[in-house]
Figure (tube, rainbow, N blue to C red):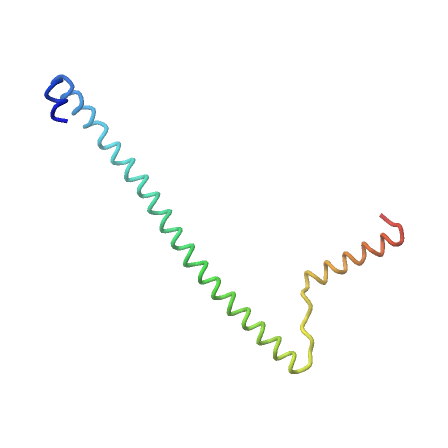
Amino acid sequence: MALANATIPLLDPLASAIFAVLDPILNQIRLAVGGLFGLYMLFFIYRIYATQQEKKVLQQIRADISAIHSRLDTVGIPPVPNQPRARLHRKLAKRARADLRGEH
């Protein structure tokens, strides 16, 4: 850089003036981009933590449901069928009966 300044002395004041104007703008841009990246990284780390917590809660719920099913089996009560499947089964059975009757 010293060689360029020594060979072209007219560009030195011009370059320093341009740099003086652009330096605060570039610093603001650097801060904004770095700040957004930092916020994104914090959000990413938080999502990993939250997902792990949700996973632990779901595992506890699954264990509780298994315990309830085992208690119901020892008493002799069959487990309740999955409600969405039961609704789907009824809907499909209704369509099948309608198809057998020739209704559409």
